[in-house]
Amino acid sequence: DNPASVDESTPHHTNALAEDIHLVSTTHLISSTLATLTTTGSNVTPTSSFHETLLLLKVWALQRGFLRGHDTFTTTTLALVLVYLYRTKAIGRRMGSIQAF
Image (cartoon, rainbow, N blue to C red; front, side, top):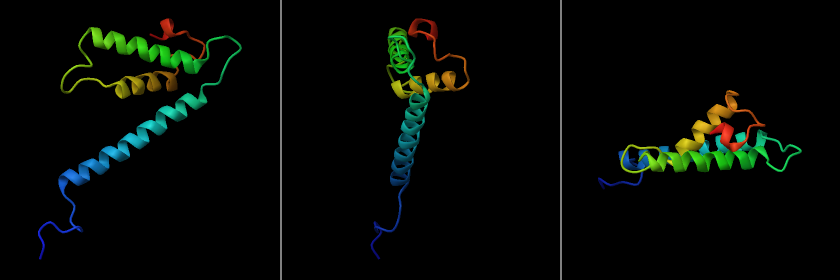
């Protein structure tokens, strides 16, 4: 008889669960991509190049207002763009951060 029964899910609760699942899958995708980037003989590893490229992309987006406000990019979105570019081989493992940017 209780309208707010524990067994009933609300749209807010369902959305919160979907966001959590999305965050976990996104984190896994980024982590697995970084794990596939093996180290090379140089001082710059592909993983550090990924992080440096992400920082450059983040600064670029901040300067243009793409990370401020509602319905804009997030750092996670920018990381997913980089993951896509690495996985489609548009950015090579041996590219430096400036070349990848």
